[in-house]
Amino acid sequence: MSPRDESSSTGRAGGGFTPARIGILLLAVLALVFIFENTRQVKIRLLIPEVSMPLYLALLAVFVVGLCCGGYFMKRRSR
Image 1 (cartoon, one colour):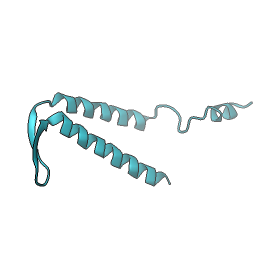
Image 2 (cartoon, helix red, strand yellow):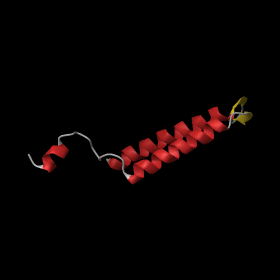
Image 3 (cartoon, one colour):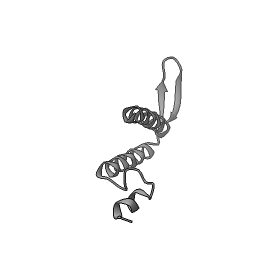
Image 4 (cartoon, helix red, strand yellow):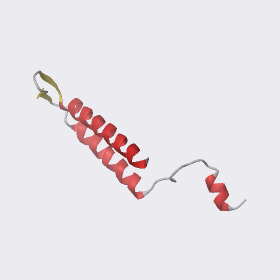
Protein backbone atom coordinates (compact mmCIF):
# COMPACT_ATOMS: atom_id res chain seq x y z
CA MET A 1 0.00 0.00 0.00
CA SER A 2 1.38 3.43 -0.88
CA PRO A 3 1.52 6.29 1.66
CA ARG A 4 -1.13 8.06 -0.35
CA ASP A 5 -3.56 5.14 0.08
CA GLU A 6 -2.89 4.95 3.80
CA SER A 7 -3.54 8.64 4.42
CA SER A 8 -6.84 8.51 2.55
CA SER A 9 -8.02 5.52 4.57
CA THR A 10 -8.04 7.49 7.85
CA GLY A 11 -11.32 9.14 6.91
CA ARG A 12 -10.24 12.58 8.08
CA ALA A 13 -11.25 15.30 5.70
CA GLY A 14 -9.00 18.35 5.59
CA GLY A 15 -6.15 17.11 7.77
CA GLY A 16 -5.28 18.24 11.26
CA PHE A 17 -4.53 21.70 12.55
CA THR A 18 -4.06 24.21 9.76
CA PRO A 19 -2.99 27.81 10.44
CA ALA A 20 -6.55 28.98 9.68
CA ARG A 21 -8.06 26.52 12.17
CA ILE A 22 -5.56 27.52 14.84
CA GLY A 23 -6.37 31.19 14.25
CA ILE A 24 -10.11 30.60 14.49
CA LEU A 25 -9.66 28.53 17.65
CA LEU A 26 -7.51 31.29 19.19
CA LEU A 27 -10.10 33.95 18.34
CA ALA A 28 -12.88 31.83 19.84
CA VAL A 29 -10.91 31.36 23.07
CA LEU A 30 -10.16 35.09 23.29
CA ALA A 31 -13.84 35.90 22.69
CA LEU A 32 -14.90 33.52 25.46
CA VAL A 33 -12.34 35.02 27.87
CA PHE A 34 -13.66 38.51 27.04
CA ILE A 35 -17.26 37.36 27.52
CA PHE A 36 -16.70 35.79 30.93
CA GLU A 37 -14.63 38.73 32.21
CA ASN A 38 -17.65 41.03 31.82
CA THR A 39 -19.98 39.91 34.58
CA ARG A 40 -21.71 43.11 35.72
CA GLN A 41 -25.46 43.64 35.36
CA VAL A 42 -26.62 45.73 32.41
CA LYS A 43 -29.96 46.88 31.07
CA ILE A 44 -30.60 45.75 27.53
CA ARG A 45 -33.42 47.06 25.39
CA LEU A 46 -34.57 44.78 22.61
CA LEU A 47 -37.14 46.72 20.58
CA ILE A 48 -39.74 47.32 23.31
CA PRO A 49 -38.93 45.32 26.48
CA GLU A 50 -36.00 46.29 28.69
CA VAL A 51 -34.34 43.50 30.64
CA SER A 52 -31.59 43.49 33.22
CA MET A 53 -29.08 40.66 32.85
CA PRO A 54 -25.38 39.92 33.28
CA LEU A 55 -23.38 41.29 30.38
CA TYR A 56 -21.69 37.93 29.79
CA LEU A 57 -25.05 36.33 28.94
CA ALA A 58 -25.79 38.98 26.33
CA LEU A 59 -22.29 38.66 24.86
CA LEU A 60 -22.54 34.87 24.86
CA ALA A 61 -25.89 35.02 23.06
CA VAL A 62 -24.42 37.28 20.36
CA PHE A 63 -21.39 34.98 20.10
CA VAL A 64 -23.61 31.93 19.55
CA VAL A 65 -25.71 33.76 16.95
CA GLY A 66 -22.48 34.75 15.18
CA LEU A 67 -21.24 31.15 15.21
CA CYS A 68 -24.53 29.92 13.77
CA CYS A 69 -24.50 32.54 11.01
CA GLY A 70 -20.87 31.82 10.18
CA GLY A 71 -21.50 28.09 10.08
CA TYR A 72 -24.54 28.55 7.85
CA PHE A 73 -22.68 30.71 5.34
CA MET A 74 -19.63 28.43 5.31
CA LYS A 75 -21.90 25.45 4.67
CA ARG A 76 -23.59 27.26 1.77
CA ARG A 77 -20.22 28.32 0.39
CA SER A 78 -18.90 24.75 0.30
CA ARG A 79 -21.79 23.49 -1.85
